[in-house]
Length: 393
Ligand SMILES: Cc1cc2nc3c(=O)[nH]c(=O)nc-3n(C[C@H](O)[C@H](O)[C@H](O)COP(=O)(O)OP(=O)(O)OC[C@H]3O[C@@H](n4cnc5c(N)ncnc54)[C@H](O)[C@@H]3O)c2cc1C
Image 1: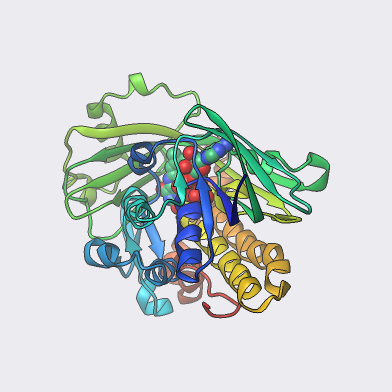
Image 2: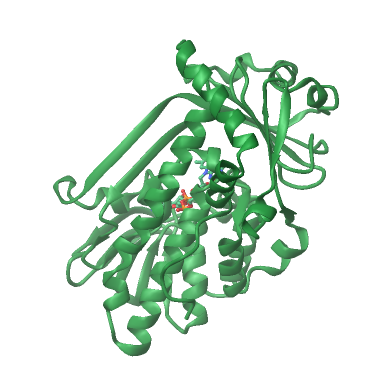
C-alpha cells in the first residue's frame, strides 16, 4: 500500500495550490483527481484575485506569468439610473485586485505539479476511510483498485465531491441560500467595454462586464433558472447586454462571436465545522458563494493558506495547535465573505416585483456612490479582508 503525508482529493485550484505549497516545505502529498488535466485547465470560472491570493501564489512559486499577464485594477464601476460611478478601491483601501483567469491559474499550477508524480489524473470511485484516526483513501486508477495511507486528508474536491459527503450529516451543520436566478455568461475575443469591471443594476436585471485580458471579455446577464441556452443566440445576448447598460456604455460595447456560453445557478452555502478528525474540507467542498463579489476562488486560496500553515507547523515542530484552529480560522473569513457576497448580490439583482424593495436598492446605490464611508466599506470587502492569523511559514 502506497503512503504519503497528505492525501489531497481534487486538483482544482485548492488541491493543486496546497500540494505545491506543501512541496516547498518538503511535505509529501498525493493529489487524486477524477478529471483529466486538459478538462481541469479548460474550465472557465473565476477571474479576479485579491492581493493576498496573488501573494500566496507567488509564495507557491507560480506567480511569474500571473504578474506578467494579469491586469491590475484599482477600481470598479457601478452603473445604475443610466449613469455610472467609480469606486476607487486603491484610493479607499490602498489595495488593488488582479484580473487573471482561473483557467490560466490552473494551467500554471498543473505545470508546476507536472514535474512531480504527485497528481493522479482520472481516478474514480474515491472513498475515504477512518478519517478520525488512521486515514486511508481507496480509488480506482488505470483499471486497478488502490489504497493510499496518509497522516491527513484534504478534501479539495468542490461542492459535488466525495469528501464532505463522507462526513455523516449529523456531525455537521449546513447553511444554505439558493437564489431565484442564475447568470448567463459569454466569453468573446473582443476588447473589454471598460478598463475596469462594470457592475450594472437595471430594471431588466443585473449585468456584469468583466474581462480576462485586454482582448478577451467575459460578460454576464442575470437570467431565470429555467433559461434555455439554445434560446440565446449571440445576437440576443449582445442586444440584452446593451439594453441593461447606461447609454454611454451601450454605444461603445463591441460584440463578437462567443467562444463559450453557459448558465450558472447562484447559491450561498457553508458547512460547519471544516475539520473532522484528520479530514480538512477546503474551498468549494466547504462553502459556495454567488460570484457577484468574486470571492469563491479567493476564499479557497485563504483556506489553503490556513491549512498550509497548520500542516507546516505540525511537520516542522510537532505542534497541532494551528491545525486544531483550522476550522475556526477559516470560517471567520468564510462568513464575512458570505455576508458580503449575499449583500452585493441582493443589492444588484432584481427578482421580485416589490417596488418598495427596488426603491430601497436605488437609494442604497446612490448612498454608496456619494458616501465615502459606504464606498470604503464596499471597497474593503471587495479587495478582501486581511488575515488575523500568523504570517506565511
Ligand atoms: C461554473 C462556475 C463559475 C464560477 N465563476 C466564478 C466567478 O466568476 N468568480 C469567483 O470568484 N468564483 C467563481 N466560481 C467559483 C470558483 O471557481 C471556485 O470557488 C473555485 O474553483 C474553488 O476551487 P476548489 O479547488 O475548491 O474547487 P473546484 O474548482 O470545484 O475543484 C474541485 C476538483 O475536485 C475534482 N473532484 C470532484 N469530485 C471528485 C472526486 N470524487 N474524486 C476526485 N476528484 C474530484 C473536480 O474535478 C475538480 O477538479 C465559479 C464556479 C463555477 C462552478
